[in-house]
Amino acid sequence: MKYRARLAGSATAVTAIVSISSVVLTSCSTETTSHDNAAPSSSSIATPNPALAQWHGDKPTIVLVHGAWADAAGWTPVIADLQKAGFPVKAPPNPLRGLDSDAAYLSTVLHQINGPIILVGHSYGGAVITNAAAGDPQIKALVYIAAFAPDQGDSLASLNSSTQGKEIPAVPATPSSYPQDGGGMGTELTIDPSKYPDVFLDNELPPAQQQALAVEQRPLSLAAATGVSGVPAWKTLPSWYLVADQDHAISPSLERYMATRAGAHTVDVDGPHLIMQTNPDAVVNLIEQAAVSTCQ
Image (cartoon, rainbow, N blue to C red):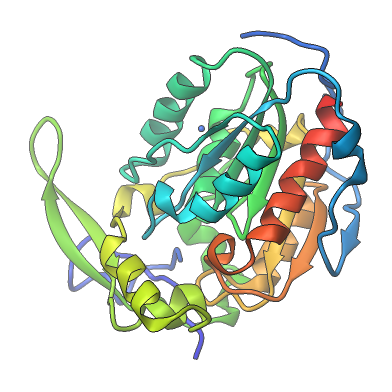
């Protein structure tokens, strides 16, 4: 069974509202052409880039941004392979509290890195990198992994209520309250742990590992789901996109639509939403392709 997240501002509204499911210039490419009408390249598999073996000089830092109902540890298999290939890697925590504030936090992380950056986002993390990368000369490429790639004025809610987004049902998310900075209460959502293996992993990992990921998940605030995106960085930066064909959290059709709109180099991979856990090689290969194309 497939699911799609529907968010609301309170327990009674959750079922009624629309759905949802981050200085130094170098020799890296500084491509800034618009991608508004670009046609993305596409392939059915992600293959290793042989140019990586002939890399000369320092490699760019790979910054991995997790999405909702996950944490940075979800990138562990990808981190291990990237480090083995000689890439410096950072996987900062994503606060999951609001699109503007999350992007601002990621920007502070990026500004502390010297040299070129390949910025990678999964799920909601894609919306964060879309906003955090705008106008930052260090960012050489964006890589979306089963991620939201919003245009200006989009929110996660509006994208998931689109024709493509409606192709899958709602994620079984439970609302709860949390205290906000400055006073007042906010609403956050957590996926039912018993449904997490199906929604995020399509039951592809050992049961004990799936349940561990379910209890480690971090909730997403309603403000993050309904926050409106600014001018997208993919309009001026080259982008790559991995579509997870068995995604039960974001419609694969919506993923393809966003990838096409961004003019992204696109691969389709037969895997679930948390594809960096089940298919880390495909994720690493796509990141390496982005790095080779823009920084070598």
